[in-house]
Image 1 (cartoon, rainbow, N blue to C red):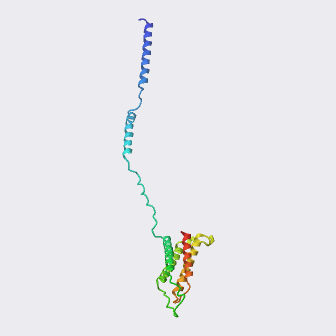
Image 2 (tube, rainbow, N blue to C red; image 1 turned 90 degrees about the horizontal axis):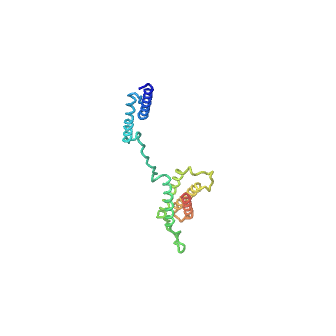
Image 3 (cartoon, helix red, strand yellow; image 1 turned 120 degrees about the vertical axis):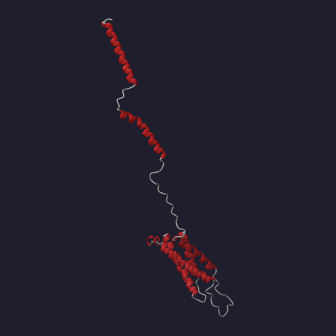
Length: 208
């Protein structure tokens, strides 16, 4: 075999060898990582899977959630409610007082000497009870609602009218009761007592 044929065969072998090396390089690239790096790459998926399982199973919260606060419940009896109840009770007893009022006396064929006027009957007792309730109503109103009264708002302000009518009505009823209870003879007091009752009713109507 001459030199020219040998050179051709050598060149063909070199081409084949180079082509084989390229094919191998494409299929399996050269791994230049160290053994420690290779171990870390194999262990990483295992560590991630373990962490995922811990997170999935640990459901307990790290911080205790604050307990829900109960809703505020107002007391069944407050100062404002007591004032309202006393006012309504005053009106009820005032109407009962008027309904039990005795007659003003005889008009014809009157005896020469009239019997002493009853001052401790049902009418008188209801009048005294009405007066006590009216005073208690005014006292609780002034104590618990004093801040609602402002003269600079004018007399037509609902809060101011409520106070003025309530105090005036209670004063008129108290005066009528005292005037009637202190006399054994018939005295004119019904009109004053009724005016006081109407004043209390108007005060309640304005407020509620």
